[in-house]
Image 1 (cartoon, rainbow, N blue to C red):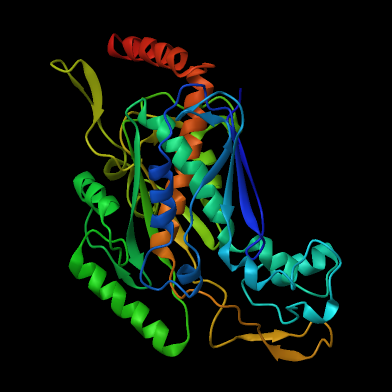
Image 2 (spheres, one colour):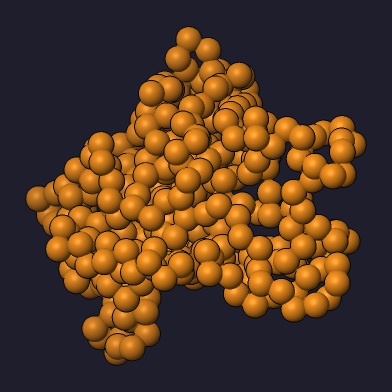
Length: 389
């Protein structure tokens, strides 16, 4: 069965819904770990007032019994506590037009105008409710379930922030640093280097002061992936392409980099390609570096997967940009919805979820299995083939 997910729900609706189909039976699910991922998504300096309202908790209503998956679709409900403030503005029933909270001044950079034109609305409220990054709460729940599946094969997925605005982490992060970062109970900007993080915080302080917003770059690292996931034979089976699509599907992400793509584009081939070596003691191939980010020819090569997301500043500014009123067609300041000024650390956690799902999907395709035991047998048989190559 193909691993796939869907989400439903609006930013200020009653709840968000996530469904995940295709996980084999027998995968242990720890709700506390799922909730921990949801908590991590809500953290970070620069978040807005909504995070003070919501305390996200996963309510699994199907597909998991007695702490393990049972092979059927998993459905997760995530309550929106802010719904109590929107019941009259966004009822399922026709309701009272006077109580609607219309958005007729679309925000530059948001889905407001394009969506209103597409769906023939003179009110962008319905567009922004679904386009909102609140939807990623459901994605993170799905990612947590996929992480539980991947952990059974020794695969881990973590992230960190490497840039906020012009300030950048000046070095590579060590895996142990990412582990410690993920275990913290207080999150500032998700950077492993305190000095670089302090400089990033100064950027966020400045945009707070000026009513602006700021973007940045996050990196997702996957450790323990076997060589051979994905394929070179068709465009849509290339795993690097699938990872890129997954990351760019995130709200406000406008670009993706796998490995050191930007740096490589400026260098000569002799300085970019990862040299190949063989250890007779370990009986395995390895690379002299990992500039390719763990992917060659659309397939994993056994090195850590490195995926970066380039996040633009979010579109809702306390100092509104120029726009046009949808009803009058007259110039107007863009609408303001309660919002964040910096979401790069949260985007890293969401990126983890998207990468975890994509890797889990590739694992399920390669190793199959209606039960975890069957999938493990297939996985171990493949590893034996790799070791004996």
